[in-house]
Length: 343
Image (cartoon, rainbow, N blue to C red; front, side):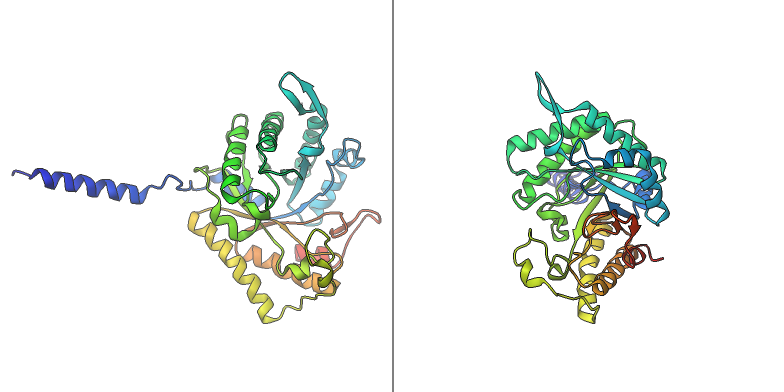
């Protein structure tokens, strides 16, 4: 049977169009077993603020012993989030420039191993107060992550790297996606299979998850932050415009308040489900200036709402003013701890 030339061309065009419609250049890779396990291990975490702020911080010694990590595990947490401040780190200078000091990275390594020995999953998360839209800052952050990742390349499998804690509003979504890809590639040179945690620009606002544009990588957990309603959670926070007018705002758990949180988290969960990704709420919490009863109710509801949607979480602060632990009295702050761990 003779097939007309135009028919053949038509069939080829149809086949090509079907192929293009099925394969996207940004098609996500389904998470592998390691990511599924990591997400399970990250179920209930807490962020240890200010631990690595200064080279002489006494907390380093305590954390290297591991007593505190064991106490955190006994309290019902499964993970700790350890921020490292690149712009405050001690450095050594050689022909390639100012590099993270090896002794500083050694101490991070010891603390990370101490937490892992206590049975906790560990997130090493970078922080910077500098302008991430500045090319010079971007270059330094990429170099810092390359050095730190190489130093921690033999860390326990339960250790994951979070590229940058809540990139600020000075960097656009598109620019952050490009920088995140540079950071990912820099880390992959020494940690090809390490679980990475990546959140969107605009301080991890969940609405910006859709703007993250990254190549397929099966070893990624995606992150966001949650603090709604901010008039309640951020009252007394001088970094937020209008914070003074928020003092005294309560959260009563009325139907409208509950619905707002559920709808917000449903959107984030839907985004992850459609892309077959795992999600971490890397930052949620409320101000110590808020009414204690309101804090307890809000914390319990958000934690349970996240868990119901298969979203792991990390509470905002361990021992800071808003934290769940009183380091001066060396005791847990109740009922906040009970609201988080549901005990």
